Length: 83
Image (cartoon, rainbow, N blue to C red; front, top):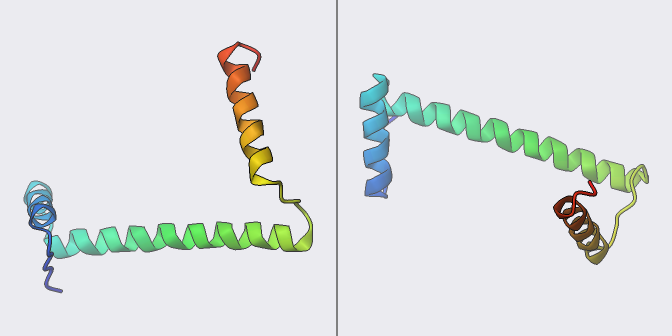
């Protein structure tokens, strides 16, 4: 694989990491892509699971305003030592 990046700053970073680690730019790119795709698969699995939970009725959705109100109340309680 030949690695050609359009962003010169990113190209320089990759070349610097390759020189510092003794690995080729291709190896670094392959590792980065593999890690990205692995993380993407994990997110997809989590989202699918959450969707299945909602669809099955195991969890009930809450209104966005209610969710923010809960977060604000929790933050306020922590600030005042009532956690």
